[in-house]
Structures are given as C-alpha cells and as structure tokens.
Length: 137
Image (cartoon, rainbow, N blue to C red; front, side):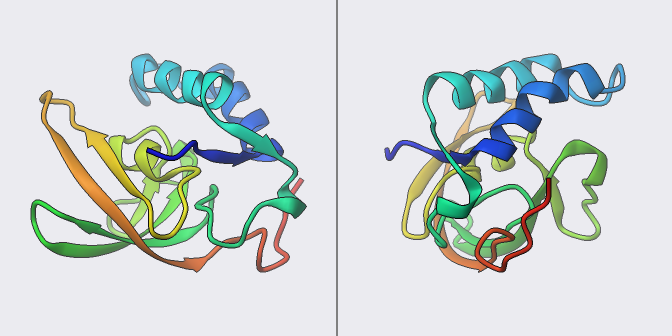
C-alpha cells in the first residue's frame, strides 16, 4: 500500500480536530487512528505542491467497492460538514480515513466497525480544492 500524502493545512486541522469535537460526535478511537496516520505514516506537503490526483479534505472522489462491485462518489469533509444525504463523508469515518491522502489508481483497505474489511479502488478525483485553486487558510 502506498504512503498517504496529506497537505500541511489538512494535517494541522486534523491535529486540532480533537479539541473541537463535541462529546459524542465521533469516537475518539477514530480520531486517534486518523491523527496517528497523519503523524506517523503520511508524507506532509505544502498544499500548493500536492499532486492533483491525491484525495485531500473537501475533494470529491469516485471509488469502486470491490466486494459490492459498485462505484460511489463522495466528498471528503470534516465531521461538522458530514451529511450522508449529500454524500459528504467525514474524515473520521472508516471510508474517509481510507481515502484521505490516496491517489487515483490506488487500492486501499477499509476496516469496518464490525471487524471486517473491504477493498476500495480510487477511480477518479472529480474535484480537489488545491488543484482548483480553492485553497483555504
């Protein structure tokens, strides 16, 4: 599996996320796993230098679930902006954590709460804020 690549801004916001989470909003275990991935596994790069095919926060990405043989398109967001009906998934969700920092063409595992896992193939990056010039501070 390839090393995830995270923008400096996304990494900083993820590190700060724990202090802003409302109690009961999401499992702290999910947050700890995400922070551990960002600090211990990911390559951190300036937003203006991230490749245009890397999934960043606020990216819209299409992926194939190999088990179900279906393609889904979602936007990866911070927990406060998540909306299942609008297909906006949190970076703290299992799928969100699996997609963040991955590149088009990558295959990644999603570890589900029930202990099972699924393999996702990233097939298209429909929108990436950094590539679109929509960097936010």
